[in-house]
Length: 412
Image (cartoon, rainbow, N blue to C red; front, top):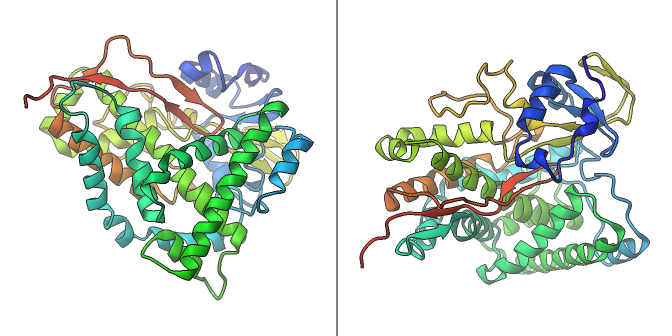
């Protein structure tokens, strides 16, 4: 290891590592594949091989502390949180056997039949959203399509009224900020209040479905059981609020926007996609690899381990840099080049192992349908001059907040 302290330079929240972290990741992979960052209190793991090694070993590398990014919870914040429900284990921050049970209970709600049944609702919502701006000649595809499409799809699947979308967006933004960024003590109470409000909203939804079940995921989750076990109320709340409503749209929004951004950045690619739609799935997979939405995940060692020749004591916190691993030259010699001609490239965009993203098939389906619709409706779509993407990054997610595009508007 040529530069063991290189990881100390990493800042995922601001500066050049937000705008383009990949030159730094290349340095990490080459000179310090496992390197400590004292600001985060975490070891950065940057090579594909080592990330997969960790993900395939949940016994020695636990997910149980996934939601702890080092924030000190102020007493005022604790008082607010006490008004809500206890924070139960979720798919994201649990290990077997708890994770096995939760995955079994929730996984049936994402069966291939249920996902296939979403094709027409996705198509209908996407068409409605595109119809609203197709004649205007310009749009922000994040605000006008990439965000509302997956939100409305997951709201429909969960059984939440469309008119609650704005509130849920606000609650989800606060939820992710509270979990994946370090929040100063004075800014914590409003975020805690938002989370408590979100919890009580979901609790009322659960009660309503218990009284009058419907054909939605909440009704499914409150009535399903596995080997005689069912989800407790706190588990239902975190499953619906965190895993479905929050995680169920945030990463898909980012994926849609990144796909269309990359399609606009590569000369001639939009026309190539219009002429050969079989390339659209390759666009989606290459975007997942090249510009990973799931930027990283946290694990904690349960015992002393050796990783890339580095001794890590029990209790060591690891930040697995998925975005770096997916461009590792050991995986692809030219990993820094965007190329949709690759066939089924390996990547970490949806994770690996027991925590592979439950909603991956739904996200791929939404991206496929929406991209084909844009190719049909906006044949000469292009980036607006001097676009400001508003790139945002935390420990887990990297996303653009704006995608300004232009095209020749239709007559009539």
